[in-house]
Each structure stands twice: as structure tokens, then as C-alpha cells.
Length: 116
Image (cartoon, rainbow, N blue to C red; front, top):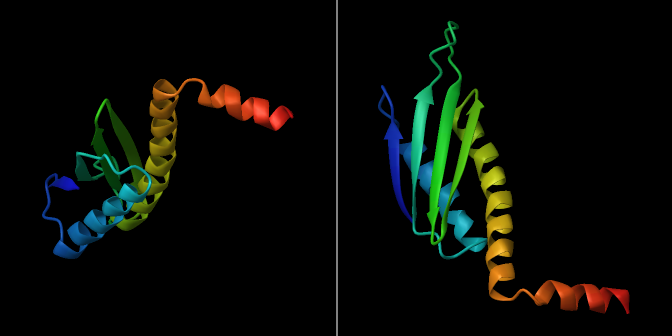
């Protein structure tokens, strides 16, 4: 997947960028037509503590749609894990919607088979 990572007002470590890329590449298992994506990494400016919370936004481009997730956590890795779980759910729903448009009688046949 072609991925652009934007770290806003700081330089992201190469390990973090590789971690993000590897996590998002695993989404191909759920839907193989992902065309690309963007990731935005921010430090939460509202926090006055020494350790500021991290904000991560992921935008995934698909043919016929776009998925978006915004997560906040104490580390970017933790936020990425949460975002991946949310994206999995969104991808499954998107895939079901697409399949329903292609084959609208499928759900009727499945429910008829369950009743008998």
C-alpha cells in the first residue's frame, strides 16, 4: 500500500514509520483493493504535562470510498493498535456493503437457508 506519513511539528523516528507501515499493510488481508493512505502524527498541545499524549489520524483510500480513524493514546504505537482494530471493523462493513450492491439476493438466500 502506498502510504504517506506526516509528522506535524516533530520528526518521527524511522522505527515508528516502519511500525506504522507494517501494521497498515496487514489490512490487505481484510480488503485487497486498498489504493493508498495517509497518516498524521501529532502531539496533543492541550496537555501541560511533561509527557504529552499522542494523536494519530489514519485515512485509507478505497475505490468508491474513504475510511478515517482518529485515536489518542500515550504512545503512537498504542494509538496505532487501536486504530487498526477500528479500521478492521470499518473495512468489513465496507466490504459487506460492496458485496450487497453487487449481489443483493445473497442475503435473501442466506436467510432462507437458515429458516429451513
